[in-house]
Length: 145
Length: 444
Picture 1 (tube, each protein chain N blue to C red):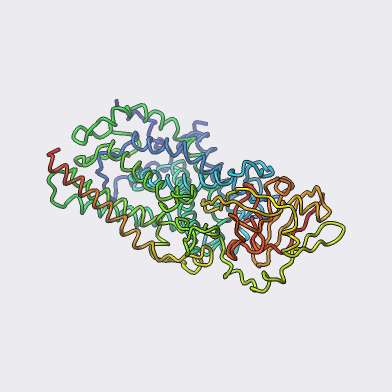
Picture 2 (picture 1 turned 45 degrees about the vertical axis):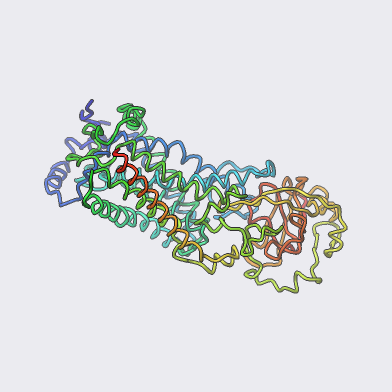
């Protein structure tokens, strides 16, 4: 047992739990093994991780670094930019299909409605978040808090 | 309080393992990896996000698995068809309360979306782990990192495919149902393992700080967490620009924003308009507030049904009894009519509640000569995968289960299934077959 711990690097319980998780994943994947498009599912599975860890996170960190280097009265002033920027980014990513009008023929066929309004609505939402942030910032500057 | 005692770095460096010199050599040759400097990162913050997800994700998972049962896998109409042992215990999806599927699927989609900011925050909080060096210390750590890939890939895959599906964007090309179901089980397996391994660490980390005190701590008084064995706390933290209170408010605010932008598609009524970025924030193009002004699941135009087929030539065939019973619209209108207020609730989480009038399915069963059917197959004039649906005996016999010909006192619009559509309490929306051509009542 001690030899397992030395060679494996953790206890047998650790190994058992992880093997069980891999077994469930393998079993689940076998459900779509007969689906000719299963390789695309695997590609998307990896692509979302690469997209998050390799694109989205570094991009967000880079934007934040730029915001933090802008001249500020105080370090915390950056939050008046961060909050609307994060709100804009979150809503853009979550509601992307409507905003960029992707897959519109299907939407029209299913719902009878086009995707025309979404870009303008999203821009209005972003403008509203930026405006609220600016007003709060202005009030705090004015009251000196 | 410091927790750097050996053995907490897990998996532990294999002291005495034959490859230990290799690990040590790799450790000394650290490439220029990103340095994380946020003074907020640490086991406590990660655990706060973790405990929220631990409480909420099981609800999302179970409601999702319930949706599979609601689709009627016993009739081969749940997708994917054969899931082996990976399913909830089978049961006949009930027809009451009528809002059951509206609730479960509204929660599945709505809560799933509300959790997106929490998932992103959790991933942000553990970002330094991605660049752990050396990348692998032991077989245990290699295995654990592989399952973390399944964990992170699983949750992101479910979020992305789910978000695309509720916006009718099928850019991925594969079957949403199959991929989302399989992805859920890949995630669930990794999630259970992750909780089993990390729960004691989470509990310990949550006890390391007082939430109440953090919620009263300003930016100026924010201090980094104590050096940790996990590599989350920045070795050289920058000055704080936001407090933990602020970070939690930011994530909570993001969730609240998504809740406001999503709830309307499920709650309907005057709140529907708040879902400004979702297809189901609107009703119809006309938006006239008339009896047929509620969301459409599939328009008549894309079904390819000949307009003549739903005109005067339309007939309803009732089969399964001693003889075929064929009714035209007048004969259907001559049957006893029943009115019920029932929701349509779809897999995309949206719903709409309307007042439907038509003939009870159980009256049609009796008319067909099968007064106690074991199931019924409803077929539409349209072609395609959802052009027919099988109903359980409980669904057919429910007193509010209708073949509706009118909604809110007016004939059904073509988009809502004229001349006749099925409406059954608590049935997933897509199985409320429109443009009905025939019903086959089966006896055991």
